[in-house]
Length: 100
Image (cartoon, rainbow, N blue to C red; front, top):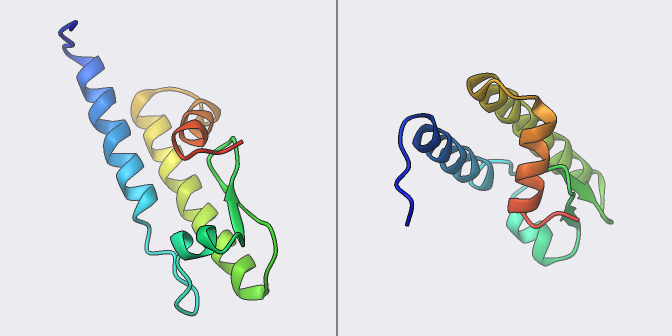
């Protein structure tokens, strides 16, 4: 295994921290969580790291709106920290979150 040093380790830690925070976002609208909405087929992950409503009520749309706004803020923060474009972060998280 290749030993990583410096910026590589920092990037890995930053990605892990961001992924954890994105997955654990307290994006709950009327007791509907992102995980529950996914299990019910109400939302899906996109290839660019955001949620998309598949079907559902205004509550689902609000859940998607709030979650995506929080994700965008996190993606911008990590992009700034790593000095990369936000699109790079979005696509990376899209893959990690299983988006298509």
